[in-house]
Image 1 (cartoon, rainbow, N blue to C red):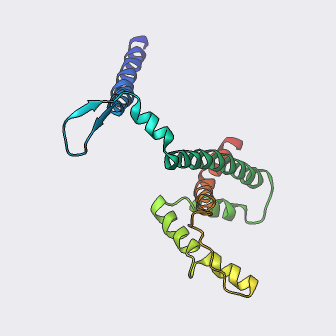
Image 2 (cartoon, one colour):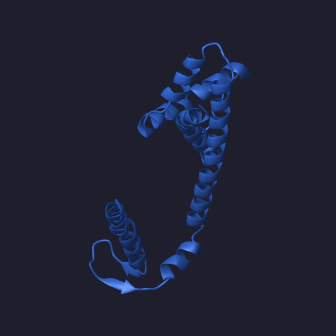
Image 3 (cartoon, rainbow, N blue to C red):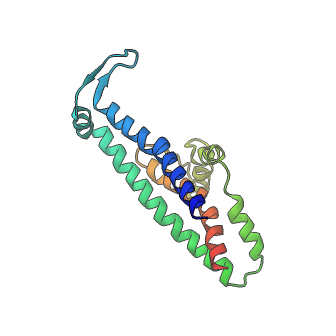
Length: 175
């Protein structure tokens, strides 16, 4: 038993080195060189690529948006999933199994999610603008995928897509 578990550990370490460590080190090595897309020649530039990157405002904005998405989506998803799991496991609700199915069935692929939310966020005849137009009494045309609202729109779509999966995980652990 000891020899078998030792061999399994060695195999895992070797696979980790082959598929994680070596490619990561190779990408870092490549980042220290300047090369053309179609030319095989490389010129060593050291950390110059990183200094250019840190001075690029588009990169800084992209990193800020990415970190914001990661933090907010993670916190909101886990909070909602925990609340819904708590409600659906502790409380005796009428149609409790129906709500469990409805929450979990919304775990489709990313392609389906993008198609659904593209239809919802469409500025000309999207569902969200139609609902807002109905309640306001005048035509509303908000660019939900525009520069100002795109991060919020992504957060909503990503949270909606993930809540069902994590809710089921929480419900299993609560049971």
